[in-house]
Image: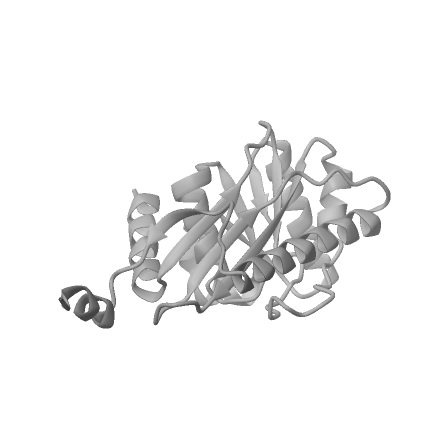
Length: 221
């Protein structure tokens, strides 16, 4: 029941604050999935939750900074688990994520560990994703690009692109760097698309509430 109420609340917030939410995604195989998005905004966790609830509909868990989870404890009710600052706490969180993957669930991992503007290069992913791939080789690695953009409306749009599975070989650093480069490439592609005034490949997932200026414009003869 809580998930249903929370989904409606998040939908209300997104419709209030954004013009549109767009999604781009390919069908992926069954089994455990590790989603690795960039992290540029406070909104990211809420956007991911809504994408999973409204589009993917998977049994998903997400790693969240311990400080953030203390500030917003309700995230525990929707599948978030804490990542502390110490190496011991971080290892414990990775082991928890590995257990969820072994149970055939999906896990979302902010590999940057902190918010950074989406144009910063390199994204500086930490090696958690590579470690998890070592522990759970059957997990599908999925790069995710999240972009917020002001376009032709008063409110910004959100673009969420779930890319093709990354088939990376090598040690955890190599796997992590391959994922990082793929997410960077996807973010650059989205920026280029927006510069060209196209959203090809994206589909609308949610439309925001009309602003006052849009309502006035619509009424004009």
